[in-house]
Image (cartoon, rainbow, N blue to C red; front, side, top):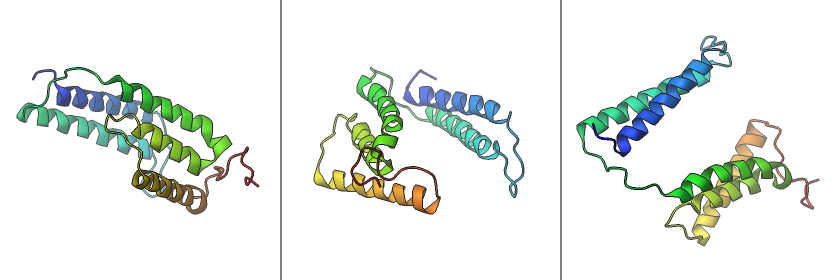
Length: 152
């Protein structure tokens, strides 16, 4: 196997899955009816490792694009937007922080253009996330930020 995109991605998934699984096994797993804190992370780690194996098998069977160069804009911008989301969630509230996250990560694409449909989709997704996480699941996340006039 040559070092191509599928091989690199498969190895990355498998390594992250194995490391995450090893860490998750240090927590009590419990049973399906009484899940412990390690139950869900172990399942995700196993799925991630299996995905890595499947990608490696695909790389072995079919040709894949070789790694030419790295586009640094998404590599830098996506993690930066996740950190910005964590910083903005208190002052802006969940819906606006998610909107900033979505638009910022979309800007990492070379095909990025802000249009009304994309902005409306991001706003709708932000609203749905706010409803699901705050109203339905009851997470203590502010809907309106601390500096906004209508934060209550």
